[in-house]
Amino acid sequence: MATLLTSLLDRTTLTEKGRFTRAVADEKAQLDRAAQAGRIGEPPAPLPHDKETDSAVWKIHVPNQPPRSMRLGHVPADSGQHVVLVDADRFYRAWLNRPMPVNDLHGTDGCPLRADMPKDRKYASAVEGFDLEARTAVPLANVHCQRAENGEPRIMFTNGITRTYWLLANQAESFPVLVSNATEAQALHEAAGVGPGPQRAAEVHAQSRQQAEQQATVKPEPTLPVISYSCSFLQLVFLTGCPALAVPGSPGTAQTGQSSSGSKMVMTGSPSSPGPTWAFSVTSRCVSHGRSSPAHKRRSFCVYSTSPGMATNSL
Image 1: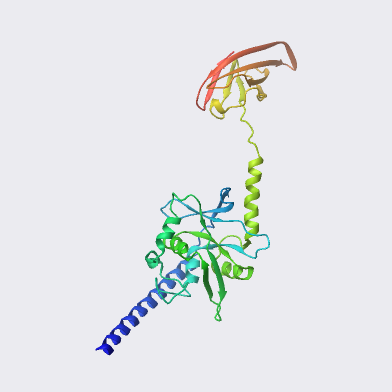
Image 2: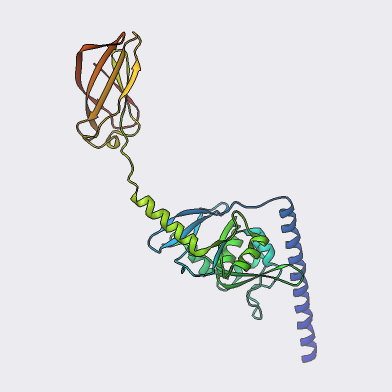
């Protein structure tokens, strides 16, 4: 009886293994057809440096979902680690060279079928990490890539395998990974890379932090009103809403134009009071036939507007 039961179990196991092997072969063939059709994702876009975690950050495009983000923390300057941007499908195809059924107790970091990845016993932790309410971005996975004797890439993990399940199961277009050295980083880029080649992780982090520091030191210039005219009218063209036009006391712009009568007028102005209502003091100087008129007109007027648009006051 025991011999019969063992025989049945062995047959079931062989049947399951056979099904898995055929499913892997079908999956590879489908991915190969997509690659031949030139379907390659766009590289993940960099996001502003995360000051809270001191991290370089990338935006991860996920179809039919809000984008997610992944981060690279501080890396020592003498580290040999490299960042590689990978196309998700190409990465999955290379990883399938080491296939493994999901939750295989005898497996380590082999690749299950994409459809089975959410069945992983640790998958809930990845869902939590990529939750939209999460305070910080998800760290990059640590990946290795070596060439087998037949030249095929072999992908392995130090950590981050479950978060990679989430990215692949949710059809992420591309994502960054961290590789331990330049040789393996180049091998992974050749097998699954997208966008620029491997970059030293320390340089990626340093550049991200430097850009953040430079942006913090650049003060935005105040938006000034543009003054133009038409005959006896002054038109104030608002580039933004009134409360954000300019800092009180800052000089206005000067603009020279041609009136319908052929006379040139030069107008300057500056805001004299803040708030929804802006008061401008404008001086106009008429120049006719190359001569300056001795008469200078100075008028003060208020523009009543609280939204972007055009306001006109007659002098």
